[in-house]
Image 1 (tube, protein in one colour):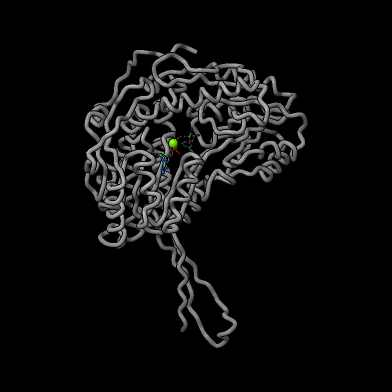
Image 2: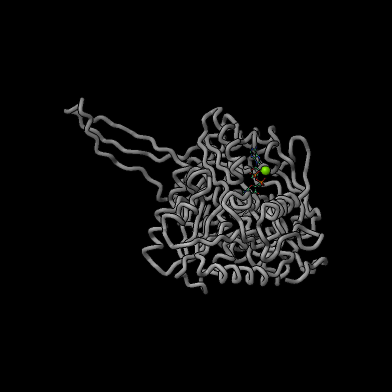
Length: 505
Ligand code: NAI
Ligand code: MG
């Protein structure tokens, strides 16, 4: 692995530098405005630790104004009167605009979050575009049912009974920094398809692509107030949104700890809550697995996006007969990864998102070592500029260690051997966590694969792969990994409510 480049040599597109130069404001009721307090906060480039932009710091007053605008747009004006087809076309137009500006968004995302530009281009942008297109299609396909009822105490009555599926109303959406644009897309897509209006609170570490997306909303022709964006911090802007009495639903992605705070904050008006939280996902390699498939897959399960994935395969179990080969293979993959600034085309892994995240991840590695784990490769910070952490493979971990129990959210994998292929035993070990977001199973035995899929308590189980996502595929957590599903048609349930209409004829 090469040294981290200290001089960044890359060209940023002119629209990107122009976007960064100007102070970015809040989007409220179709207008870009300063925070009521006039406060701003800095945005850092993780590759250098330098400030690249200044963004308005929204707080309760701004959230109040944004919610008021979202309420107005939900109840009056063009949005509630649009046909589903018109709504679908606006969402499709948004996807087209995103595609036209793909390179600009990819660069902005990489500068803001640190991830390799190659990944922003090939994953974050295409997945976001596809999500909007998928949800654009749903706008015209959200329907209720007609229901034949019996009513024992009205034997002579005749009825015409149906359900309406109506938008839940004004939604607050609080998103994290690991896939800043894509997390916005996952949340906005179904809210728009169902006719809700939105107050979006991007993560304070990575507000830039959401703000640029706000400009595309105007360009696409969405009415003012349908999307409002309030940038700011968790306690300052996120908390007043989660507890706001005029917000009908809050959707959150982030830490389990904050998910619980949001759930409590929502009790004031009993707003609906959906949560996509942490994970400690197992990847399990059986003795008969095709290692040519399994090794690169389990390496990318943890190292993709620097391990900053809620479904990162951070607990790797390998049968003892293949354990050494898996450890060697994953360690070799780790050493092949070029660690460097995301804007460098040779970079395979960029910096972590923030100083705080880097400190947290290094703290976990140290805690593992102090409890007796051993480092095979990696093990610490790289360089002294930017927030780079080496891809790290730990062995000799035990199930009780903090590194095995808690979400690290960095490029750190714990590899443990298992003794026999008894699926109930290994399933129990895989399930020995309070999380349940995802898992992957590597075997050439179909029956083992599908038996494991049933036994694993997780919202997604991959067989002979990890990190396969699609707009049509529901994603979300069992246990403390969350409530509700994003993407797929399940996501629409989170943004609609059912009304039964009973006509007695
Ligand atoms: P966080 O959960 O604090 O932040 C996520 C979002 O929630 C941000 O927009 C933040 O401003 C907001 N927020 C924070 N406190 C809030 C509050 N009291 N009320 C309302 N909104 C609030 O996550 P953070 O601090 O960025 O990362 C800490 C850890 O959380 C990570 O190391 C990782 O383990 C986990 N995490 C999990 C994610 C996932 O995709 N499941 C994404 C990001 C972080
Ligand atoms: Mg936090």
